[in-house]
Amino acid sequence: MDKQLVEDRLKMLVTLCDETEPDIPDDKGDLFSGMYMTAHEMLDRIEDRQFSWKGFEIQGIMEQANRIWKVRNKIKSGEWDGLEHTIMMHEIEDLIRKNQKIAAIKEYRKVVDCTLREAKDFVDSIQASLVGKLKH
Image (cartoon, rainbow, N blue to C red; front, side):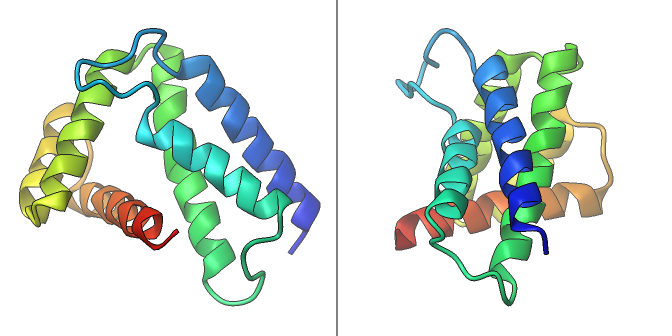
């Protein structure tokens, strides 16, 4: 695995997140979105070598980066409204914290035209991100 390639692509992701982060904090009082913080955290972990290149850890980082990349490109292209997306993400995170994963999947599908599998994979990645934040 080319470590420099992974780091360079995560830098691209962070730049995209910087460009697409809402200018105004949301109504829940958060200054930064979860995706924004996750992208920066992943880059920091890669730069500081705080992960294992072996096993599933780097694969998980790359998969999560891919999901964030797709969402942020939809915001950049105008396909998604940044505010609508931010609200959806907060609702999904709240539902996951309340152990209402099925409701979170339904919430995602209300906003995003996708298959049930894609919605489940997305919610699973958000859930893994939230669990990871609790461990750090």
